[in-house]
Length: 104
Image (cartoon, rainbow, N blue to C red; front, side, top):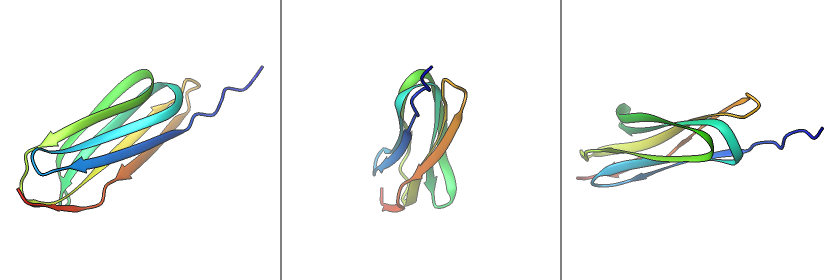
């Protein structure tokens, strides 16, 4: 029997501002997987101001956005992803934006 094709996944995150301030995380795989979970987090300085996790099953991608009210400060966003392949392997990774200074 042929071995299943290797699954490759990539994770991205972008931050948009000033109002509302939002971050979008996206995880894309080369083929369908059993489950994708992505957590999108917005930081002001070192403090988490918004964090939310999303899960989707039997898919090859997941893209979600979180929002927060704009308060002047320095912000960055992270996306943390986990993939469970159909064979049961678990892949994980993260992405981070640069820090931006926002005036509201």
